[in-house]
Image (cartoon, rainbow, N blue to C red; front, side, top):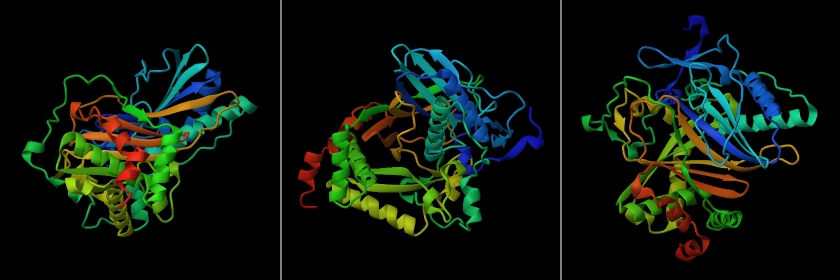
Length: 422
């Protein structure tokens, strides 16, 4: 039960789209060296004090609207610690309920000084940049506790929605969403049944398949982008589209990708000051457009630059009600989602402790039938410790070989040969 005085606010559309499935985004690291579980528990408690949004709650009203509530009157759930296989990312045995709190820490210990630590944060209150900031703070607090026995952590204000931050800056909805090339009017055939199941579905974990380029291969991709005056993001996106055309035989492919608006707003916004500060951009290519990798990367870069310059991406979230949720009027069925979260910083750790891998997972605490079109396939891209990772979520049997195909497109010798006259 909750009272009106418990309400922080009704979630904005940019946050609401993660309520239906109770989507938690997980940031998981493997640890080598001796991990002090008690110190990590103290660090997580400090993170909860510093970022009280983690112990807030989300409930739904009769229409399914998410409502952000202040923390309850019970003690926050602390870090879970157990012994298991650190090579696996598990669904915690304990309940992860958004109506209890919005951030959880799962710690798996093993013999031989190995461990896995996964921070789960409800996606309505944190996007990629926000999650990385929270994980960095956690390991900073842990290091402080191990090295000094103390943690200094002052409480921050609740993060705000993108819509609120845009309104404060005078940004209004324009005539274009920026996604016109991948949307079409919603028709009855696009509708996905949204009838509620008799019993809540059990939690579901999505751990994307991954392929990791080694540091030398990663450096070659970066150098290739620099040599041909394109961005790494543009080059990787072009490789994804080329690989998809090759594998699926499609004559036309369209992708949707998020753009972090924090540094693009005036004034800029700190990583932890916003929930989902993401605009969306789209790019569509015909088969002929994909014949040259660098040429395609340039077209992608030009499209992004134009949409940023004209402010289309900045206000794209103001079109979300038309695209996501029960009141949508456009369908994005069949689109490809491509999320590039960039370079993940090296996290602080005490001497003798190495965080040697990082990956992104998703957990739906109570999955329900979708209220909108899902991506045909989602590609995640990020770099950690000089290693570029490509990850695939969904897509079915036709995209089983997609990651290796993308990596092949990024192979520097083949690419250099193909673009020598570009």
